[in-house]
Image 1 (spheres, rainbow, N blue to C red):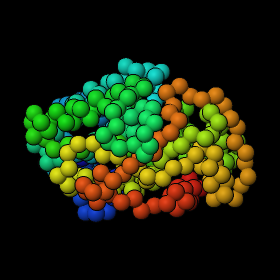
Image 2 (tube, rainbow, N blue to C red):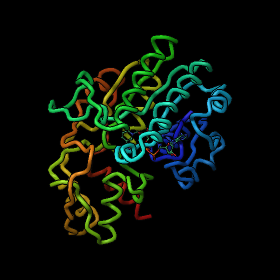
Image 3 (cartoon, protein in one colour):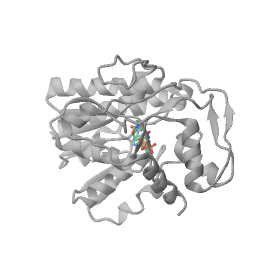
Image 4 (cartoon, helix red, strand yellow):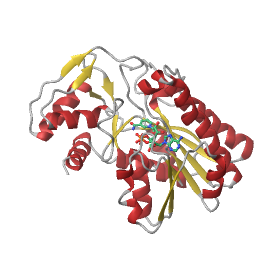
Length: 305
Ligand SMILES: NC(=O)c1ccc[n+]([C@@H]2O[C@H](COP(=O)([O-])OP(=O)(O)OC[C@H]3O[C@@H](n4cnc5c(N)ncnc54)[C@H](O)[C@@H]3O)[C@@H](O)[C@H]2O)c1
């Protein structure tokens, strides 16, 4: 089962699983996902989809009956949105995760992989960040994800449900939404630069991010799913890129020279984010394959279709 299957990462995971010969049950309520993301999947015989909320535990129990693995991606995935509406984020991200865990326990699922976030670290001066760094959530979203991780651990300890939490850093790639108010930086920059509009940088652009291409995140999910690993793992590229550099690279790839516009920093944003990925490498052989340039080229190509 893939929760959040109509979202950016969930749809990419579902497609890979289908291509690898698995049967996939997709769940989504389209709160941030898009029907367009599952158009190709719906043509596949081995993909079944249910529109529904992960807080509906009866529906989950029914759909999980013959499920071996749950890849739990569904969430309201935005720091600013969680600051604007903390109750909605709590319901989707904490209550929803608890329902998914309880249904997985009841249906004796073999393994549950939870999409957590680097947001759990908050402001960490200690770069690159290791999983042993003490979490310091600075937004409701970060707290939601940390709570989800702790529930995952508890469900393993109390009920024996094997769980892995993957702390994604900045994921990018095809099907990421460029147009919501809460859109991520790469699809927003590609979309504005392609349309000859100045990309907006919050702050001075020297902030560092660790961008990871979605296909590497998909691989991490499948490796974690098949492994006995329990606990928290950074999933990133381990490369540092500033936002100014990112704008330059996208200009280069699109053959443009659009200068960015600078605006005030956003609430809850952190200055530096860079992962140490050795734990995932050593435990389940995670090894990112895509360079930033290759990932950006593929993403830009997809957006231009
Ligand atoms: N994209 C990133 O860089 C990033 C970084 C860290 C963590 N994550 C996490 O990865 C996961 C996937 O993120 P994404 O970028 O694909 O976002 P997305 O918004 O594209 O996907 C999330 C999906 O979950 C669905 N959803 C939300 N609440 C639901 C509910 N109550 N019931 C059923 N479906 C629901 C949405 O409709 C959407 O399709 C999220 O858990 C997110 O927090 C993403």
